[in-house]
Image (cartoon, rainbow, N blue to C red; front, side):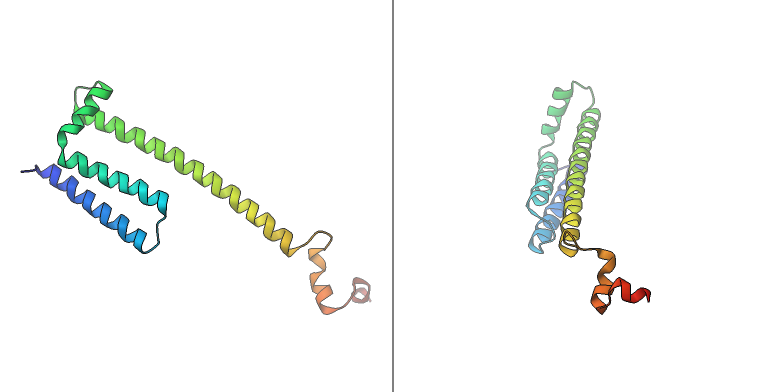
Length: 131
């Protein structure tokens, strides 16, 4: 029989996996994000079902308490995720800037004056408007 904490972890893992597949089916999540959350859900489920795997963290980090090793692992994971998300945000910002420049060039081709568009549309020249 599984302990209460293992059951809670397993239930969390199942909910996470169901939500991940639901969002994929509804096309609200893409491949990379799907795989990211699938791996997290599978890892949590595996560690919940086989708690002896958690003791590997003690060996890797050389700590006396499993909680300390798990905390260190989670902290490093969040730092890595933060770094990745920061990288993606910068990449998206660059793409948005490039897209805005392309749209500007298409809307106002080289040689046209964006301030004259109302005058040109009415058919009047700037000399006719002054008089």
